[in-house]
Image 1 (cartoon, rainbow, N blue to C red):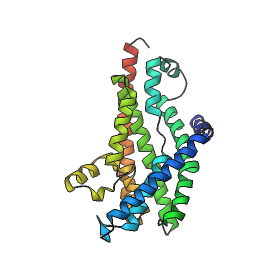
Image 2: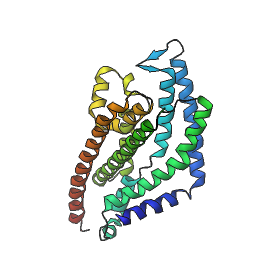
Image 3: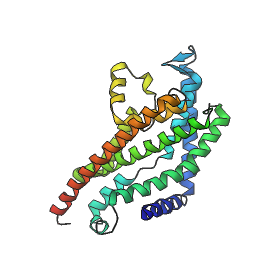
Image 4: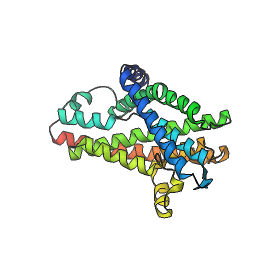
Length: 263
């Protein structure tokens, strides 16, 4: 465990070295925030409530979503397929660490660094510029942050699964981008699931992706109260455990494929 904590800390510091990249992420994120605010203000021009959201709630939702998207840095899938194609993975498998946990720890360190140096500035500037709402109680903040952390873990697991799929397709970039597109759409990161057509909404709520953004954000904007939060956290934990087991099985099969190739 100490090894992985050390990897998280090292990755956290390394990500800070790319300060220009972080500044650009803040700037592009704020541009996205402004566009979202303009679009949703136009949508609510002649109505006060839509999909159960007021304009303030909808704008707050999409702005905080933009900040959370830039707080999550998932590169484990691409790293895994790159190591497989270069043959470097044979050396990594000889190390006394679990490769999935090692790559996940690196991504977690990057995500924590991005959260502090990209998402927090974005949030603070948006709070001042657009007067977005914030949770009224410390309890709501704590539950929201826990839900967001579970969402990050879920995305790390999805990223690793995309990397395993990339081993078979020999095209890790494609599987990773396909995963990103599916997650962004079905997670409610761009539009709350409440705005989906009924059939599509039921499908999205049956899939694990809502745990990445919609469930934490529903807590943040008050659509999920504290008494309702426990089942939400339980659902997120269920999907994290399920994807963890699935990723372990997929990785075990992929390692056999590596052995067949003579690795």
